Image (spheres, rainbow, N blue to C red):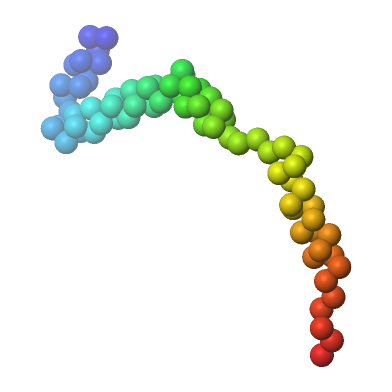
Length: 74
């Protein structure tokens, strides 16, 4: 660890800022992963609606009507 501090002290101000930004980036990735990610997914998946067979009948009826439709001849 001491070796890293010595190397860090040899960097320019701009390079130190880049190292700091990279460390922040690594921590931000760590915060996003794990429980927070799965709880967000869980809330999204629980909010998905479910359709009953009665709800789907409308689509089936429309499909049947569409299949009966005959295009006009030119």
